[in-house]
Length: 538
Image 1 (cartoon, rainbow, N blue to C red):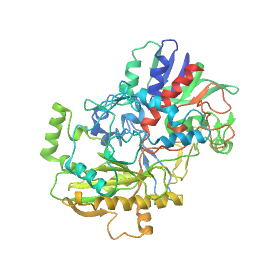
Image 2: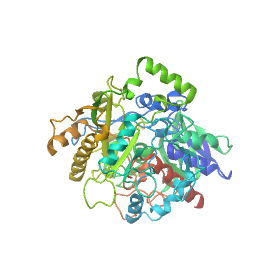
Image 3: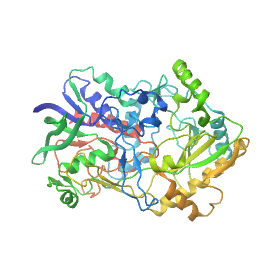
Image 4: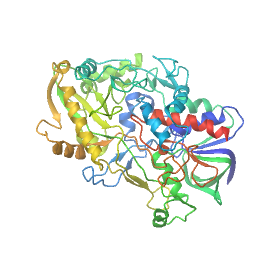
């Protein structure tokens, strides 16, 4: 079978949904959007708290497992990745964070011309519809991606904010504004109490257009070529092999795992990696699959007293009440995102911006289930979680295919905490968590520190705890990094075109040369918005 389109997009995740919308908007171009997963029809996708279920559901989640990681406790890590329309925006924790302006200025300094903060800000604004802030010089008021404040506050979360101010962290009600330093409630990608994924905001309107063709359960096998020019994609659907031809471009939007995997399956990558997997070399490009970065989060956990935390709301009659409340008001436990409070601190003097982010929840998880199985299981007794991650890790890992079979999982080597700066920063982050928990504003509710436990005090003890009890924050990037052609670690140029190959681009989180200072979905949407303009102008 042979089909022909102007553009083929591989992956209907966050970036793919944006591209499908923008490339079809003028009606001039035909677009094929391929998605290996299925429809976003599960109610657990659309109920915000449903992420606790979708994070472990193989029907909508690739559920990758890394190789045993010697630098983080000699254990593998579970990596949830969306396998459904909307991709990871359909299963993530719904938190909206752009990162610091300096992140994007650094991209430009690394040779990514056109990606400074002043260059990318218009695309953040174009994507965003901020319910509270509306349209202003820094925010958008009518974009497809809805951004809202929590419908409910919690007395413990309010106390955490007061404790942060007592500890010297300023209150900042717009973390995505002029400066990131501070503490506040998270804003979320929720609209009217329901998850507002990229499938909801961008893809559903685009599907009304006759020039967009969506194919689900379509597993990409490889990009096809005429010499060094990409001509299409071969994929399998319902047991049938299909080749689709792209008159203009093939665009890979599979994310930080699947895009480098598909490049290597197509013969683009390090010749040694390709040879070991039995894939003929189409174009040698050693940067493919390298430069892997991820946020590594380590939780501190405290037992509370004389309060009702999120833990108790998830059981018995209180849960029945919360379900009824959500059904009527779209509020309460079921409208909760992965964390209530965010805080950004500088752990040492001389830093130009925060180097640690905190995800804070008036609840606590079963540590073994979360760390070793990637499952979110709330404890029975009241608890508080204060979880730091280093915003800009120096450690680098890799993602490479093992075989030439498209469904064989690639080898993911995260290499967490390999760098000495990362080690010192996460230890400092744990100490800041304790400082926050010790403030007077929290003292009426604080019973004891459960993890890491007061018996662990030295830097070495805290680092060992971080190695054995930390986990992914679901933010892998960098495996098809943007950069100059003479940079051996880069894969695409600032136009997101694959070096040395015509008519082939990568548009997703894998192109980030450095990890942004916060949750990655907002920046991924921005990348796709900007890419759409570049593609249409080509």
